[in-house]
Length: 173
Image 1 (cartoon, rainbow, N blue to C red):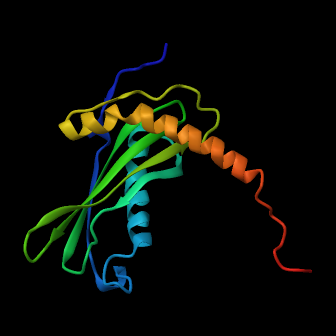
Image 2: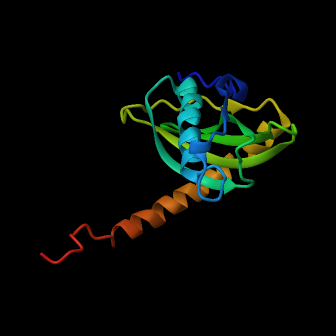
């Protein structure tokens, strides 16, 4: 029998911080989006592995929202936790809270959901469900089934697109 004891979202919670430095900035003097995505994927994968104890790979970034820019006087506090599970896949919610280090003002700068998949295709035991603890977690976890259905629909659309994408060289030979 499969152990389906729920795992607390807090048991998967990852909190990291990053101070914004000059090399992080783009031509608009805000943190480059690619830098943010790299920080997010790196940290969020730890939350996924905390639950699975297996090698996971990034399958998708969903509902990516760059809400407020991060600037040179800011610190970025990234929080990530597992917000839904399947058999080989799981969803991780990520938010980045910015803090202006000069004024102390805090703001929500970024949110997203990342789907990770267990790399081992032989993994067939359903992952344990997650149990929210905070009001935020209850809200996020309650929307998992809807987001998962949206991802399935997008995968079907992507498969259709892939059927029409050519891999031939675009340059005349």
